[in-house]
Amino acid sequence: MHDFEYCAPDNLQEAMALMARHKGAAHLLAGGTDLIISMRNRHKRPDLVIDVKKIPELSAFSIDSAGLTLGACVSCKTIYDNDELAEQYPALVDSSSLIGGIQVQGRASIGGNLCNAAPSADAIPTLIACSAVARVASDRGERQIPVEEFCVAPGQTVLEEDEILVSIFIPAPAAQSGARFLRFIPRNEMDIAVANVAAFVELDGAGQQFCSARIAIGAVAPKPLYVEQAGAALTDKPVGEASICHAAAVARDAACPIDDKRGTVEHRLQLVETLTRRALFDAVARARGETV
Ligand SMILES: Cc1cc2nc3c(=O)[nH]c(=O)nc-3n(C[C@H](O)[C@H](O)[C@H](O)COP(=O)(O)OP(=O)(O)OC[C@H]3O[C@@H](n4cnc5c(N)ncnc54)[C@H](O)[C@@H]3O)c2cc1C
Image (cartoon, rainbow, N blue to C red; front, side, top):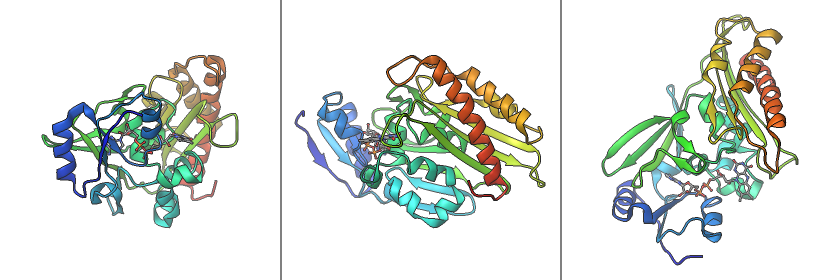
């Protein structure tokens, strides 16, 4: 491993100043479950590693009437261990409880998953489907980025060299709404998604018609994809097999997967359709207050 300096500032201003001073030579460390592996295999060679876990804004979460503000380095385990968070944001729990095993979940953060920008990342489709917004800061100021615009290519995001992801905001779920994340892996756990899907739906008061929907798919394009047209296909449609199967076919048509050792193009397209259909049915069930 390349020699590096380590620091752990306890406030955002200091971290931002370090990032501004060191630019691309400084890398941020949240749980380290991606970063340390990249440093070990020398894909990343930072001169300075800035551990951000002592910064209050990044290491805490809060829920109010507007929504969830999730600090960038809150761990997956913290998320699924919290009853309020689990009840209001079950799709986030779907993702958090699938990322690695229990040891990884104790360290790995949703913010790190997002900033690592793997096409197969298991938290990003959920964030997109739930209309999450990334709050980013640097010495130059702050900006907010819808998560569907955050990743641009494998391992690449819109973050500038001096920018820090501070938190992720997810709006409070509307009444009669539900969300679900599903993935396919060849083993039961500890594997990279061959395909993954997150779906969010909002139903009418009777729970019989879609008011709106958002669908995001992963591991089937160079970055996690927001398939706006698949959600739009459900708007004002009755909840049922026909509307859901049509939206799933639209999601499949938006995928542009590759063949690799984990799956073929054909397999991945079929998975996107199947997972989208199942995620939509589960999201509908959650919107109706049923357990999935
Ligand atoms: C055994 C194992 C199993 C895994 N299984 C899965 C899986 O099933 N699904 C899955 O999606 N992933 C999986 N991963 C990958 C990894 O655990 C996740 O991507 C995790 O969410 C990364 O979070 P982290 O906090 O460890 O990030 P880190 O490794 O700390 O950081 C990841 C990247 O984000 C940058 N970064 C971190 N914080 C910030 C910030 N605040 N602002 C800007 N940049 C930042 C870092 O510099 C680094 O480039 C696995 C990893 C391991 C080792």
